[in-house]
Each structure stands twice: as structure tokens, then as C-alpha cells.
Image 1 (cartoon, rainbow, N blue to C red):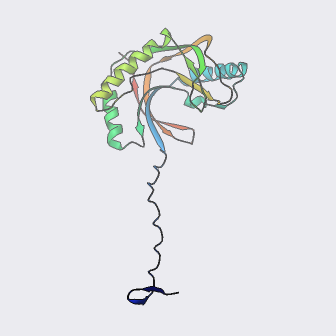
Image 2: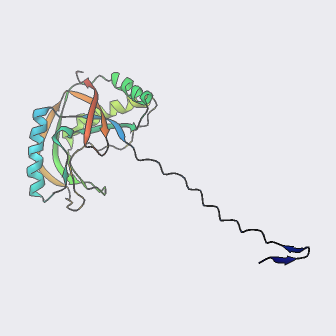
Image 3: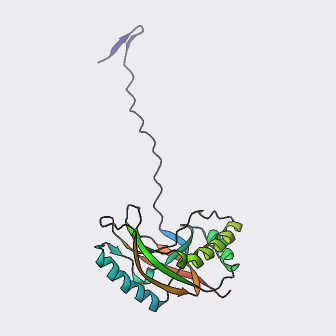
Length: 203
């Protein structure tokens, strides 16, 4: 129906539809993560995996195990979906390191507080060599423009179980000798670690 106004019958203007609110597109989750890590040799990894099976069973931890080929101690994160120039800078930092081979020894286990419930091996003085190597690597990365985290707790994740959590416990010491460190590319969601480069620890 036409609307009456002072100038005669003029149709009322059509109502404008409300403009939809503009929402920022959500960032896609990362597909890959690059990090430096210490990886046990094949025989040591098998021994650690067998130890983990017994330890997890004795404490009722039944979540998703970390595959024997992916057991590691993280040294430092390089980045997520990093550009080639970033990875190259990280490699330049690693090239500068001169560090002797070290022993890593774990003497405790605990479930970290993260929602995924990572059950990990920890160590005191038995991981001091790892801490020192990580400090050296962090300094070298800082010179290449990286910002390493100030806090660091060396550990090896065995399993993810958010339901069956374990307070810190003492365990029979177990460890392995470390003669190299590696740059690893993790394919997120695929349970796959790709070793891109390794550096020998020779002093």
C-alpha cells in the first residue's frame, strides 16, 4: 500500500536488508612443525619403548602411545609452517655448535597438566647435559633472530592420556647416549616425523 506524504502518494522506500557482520576468517591450523630434537638410536628406542609399556601398564595409563620411531627429547622449536628462509637460519645456528656427546638419564615420570594428558619421563642431574646443549643451541638461534623460550624442562613423551593422570613418581633410572641432534619436521595429525638434517656431537 502506498504511503501518504506532503507531496502526494509516494511509495515508501524498500527496507534495506541488514548487512551481515564481517567476520575475520579463522587461521587454518598448522600442517607442519619444525623443531630440534635428540633421538635415541634404534636399539635404545626399542629398549625405552619396552620400558614404557611396562611403566604405563603398572600405572593404568592407557591412552595413545608415541610410536617407537618418534620417541625424542625436544631441544627447541623452530616454528609452525615455517618458510624456507626460517629453516635455513635455524640450520645456520646449528652449524655453529661444538658440543661433546652426552648421556641422558631419566629418573621420574609424570602426567603434564596439558589437556591432552602427556605422560612423560623426566630427569634431574641426569639431564644436565641436555640442558647445557639446549642453552648453547638457544644462544646460537638468538643470534639468527629467533626468540628461544626462557623456560625449559627436558622430557620424553611416552603417551597421551587425559583421563588417567599420574602424579610425579620416581622410576628406575633409564637412559641413552646421545651422539647427534636433529632437525625434525613433524607432519601434524599424521603421526609422522621427518628427519631433515643431523649434526654430530663431537666436542
